[in-house]
Image (cartoon, rainbow, N blue to C red; front, side):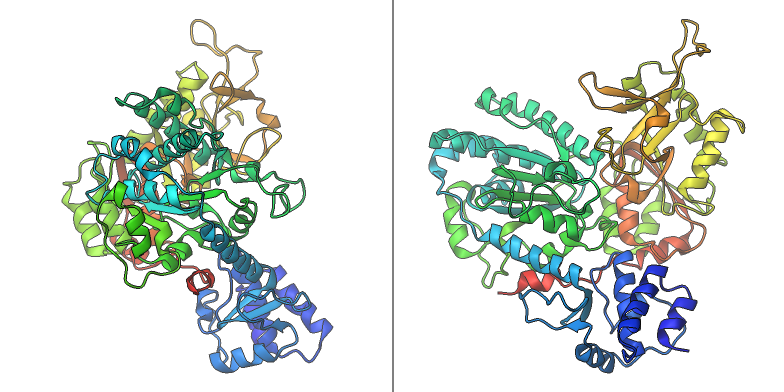
Amino acid sequence: MSLLEALHREGSLRTVDHAFAQALRRLDRDTPDAVLAAAALASQAIARGHAAFDPRSPQWLSEATTDWPDPEQWLALLAESRWVATPAPGIAASAHAPLVLERGLLYLRRYREYERRLADGLRRIAAFAPPPTDLAALAPLFALLFPNARDDDRQARAAALALLQSLLLATGGPGTGKTTTIARVLLLLIAQARLDGVSAPRIALAAPTGRAAERMAESLRAAALRLSALDGIDPSLCEALPTQASTLHRLLGSVPDSPRFRHDERNPLALDVIVVDEASMVDLPLMCKLVEAVPVGARLILLGDRDQLPSVEAGDVLAAIVDAAGDDDGLPAALAQSLRPLLGEIAIQADPAPLSAYRVHLRRGYRQAESLELAPLAEATRAGDADTVLALLRGGELAGVQFHEDVHDPLAGAGRDWLLPAWRALAAIEDPLEALQAAARLRLLTALRDGGQGAAPLNARIEEALAGAHRPAYFHGRLLLITENSYRHGLFNGDIGICLRPRDADGRELANAATVAWFAGGSEGVRPFHPSALPAHSGAFAMTVHKAQGSEFDAVWLQLPRQDARHLSRELLYTGMTRARRELHIAGSEAVLRLALSRHAARVSGLSWRLAER
């Protein structure tokens, strides 16, 4: 049996992957089977989140019990194929070949071009030097905003770099002050424009999902209020800060039934500063299109946590940029000299990487509530240190963290007693805004969508427990999760709403009143929708960790599956536990925890080495 057919029979390929290879065979009957199998695997790689297929590590895509070709012979065969282009680095691939082989990776041509264009675009932005800044004139305001600037304050370093450069990557875990830093950066840029006698910069805030954009805007508004209370800060500067954020799709201007956007390299965004939060969630095609739409002379600021789960779609862009930038223990000599008036003495990098001057990693935690001691557990999880993670969980000494070892059903025992009363209480809240705020305080997070510990069956069980087996589809108090973007409704993947029925003075549901699904937004803080008019949605009492990215909850119950699953990873655990603000419950077995912590959510990509090229 051929390798292609063996992979298809064992379920390693989707129908579309197999059909792609068969199409190449029909066009050229002499195409070797190993080339056809590699083509199918390159297609499958995209579905698995990779940017390319690595013939030296086919096990990343298939656990098929088959004899794989010798890697070097396989690569040589691919290089000779009519279906595979082998362009020089940085050169566009021929449109006549659907595949591209570069540095041992086999790409679908479109995704190789996304990588190449993204690398070119980031280098273009980084290479542009903004007009000279009078740092001496800004120094008093800078010192007010960053009183510890000369003590290796990474927030201050990020702000100083943003004044002199057009590209900034600010990374850090939850609560390290990424949004606070950006509020102060934007305040400085507005003040700089006033000193120069020019118009205030046109600023856009954006994030991959509607919920992440909403959180970003909330955080910026809160930061602006705190800044306005500082002595010596001109209130009008705070009033000029942006107060709204949008999804990246809305920012770029989606075109119905098209992968293109209204804004691109030919029609760039009319903006001076673009700030993107939750950059780890941005996939390769979207980041490429965003970067190409950044106009010449504009600043691009990316915020994110590289230790979170990568994007659902292909690529791990944030991690690749961080890897290319290297550590941030110092700055190139010329830049360190320029920033001395603001930061004092800074360590000098002897041989800086091409992007090392554009990345700052924020280390100090600010957001963590006193009731939740999460930092030691998050750090051990990030490092994949299973022994320390288990010792911390079993020790019971971390404030706000509880470990339910070998508990596989969150709706039995302690889990049921903790979860269901909070959800039942939602039905007693009449005000939609108050109900949505209460709903955001607690979430059951799962690693899987399906299966015994999956979000879908758990939602069904929760809804039955709350409203009975013969419940109406949109019962009073039901939580809804939007699962696709709808610009017509202004609802986006990840948005959460609640169903409420009007009640009389005695709290009884009005017989003829229609159920209303309420979502955040609008001038009143909430917007009503008829449930039947909503875009695709599901229940939201339980949701996957992937869907929870970009959101935070006061309390989280993180339920692990009974058995190991391929996509369990330390990044999934880290992302799930860092959704909690005040209380975290983790349920699962030692065996599954150890397996998850031993696994990286790594992606095959060439973006890092493209960006590192000098």
